[in-house]
Image 1 (cartoon, rainbow, N blue to C red):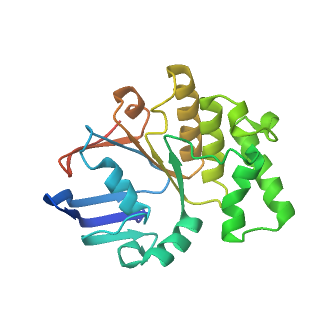
Image 2 (tube, helix red, strand yellow):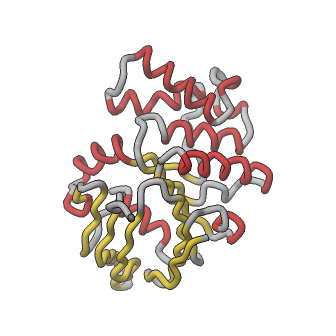
Image 3 (tube, rainbow, N blue to C red):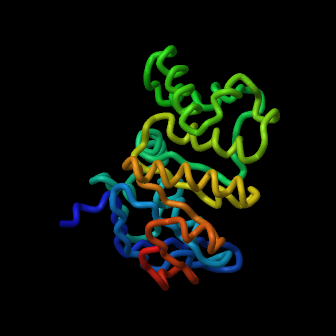
Length: 230
């Protein structure tokens, strides 16, 4: 028996207006995502992949349609409300890692907890170390990001995204700048998180990476053209 979806999109549209006219990035997207899914969003450049995850994460607002995440109407949130909700609900991993070079790895992982005022100071450090251990990078905890490899930095970025224990992890081209061996290691981390109950949504244009998901949707010109189990 199928459970209630964790995420529901209903006829989501996103338009951008500029000097050259209106660009429709998303055209009536409807989608359900279950808890614990490892969902991959793929498609060519300009297909709408990043726009879709940005509206899902509350980083951008829809033009029309509805986004419900565990009963929360994300499409109704203003920027401040969206930021508060995202801090508790969604961890975001970027292709470029976005680690602060002046902080140690453990301090980078503690940052989201500091911003959200979650846990005591001691608990934040303990949790950050546990997360670095989970992604097998704890031995480097006191180093700055510049002292470790790109693949290791991406693992730290995953640990940081998990800092506030969000139920959803969104990763936008997280392996785009990694070699194949490091990519496999990072994807193993995502698979393990999904197996543990996290909902993982990963954007990629790489077919080999897409094959690691439990379900793959393909976008073209702002529309879902395929939706199938991997």
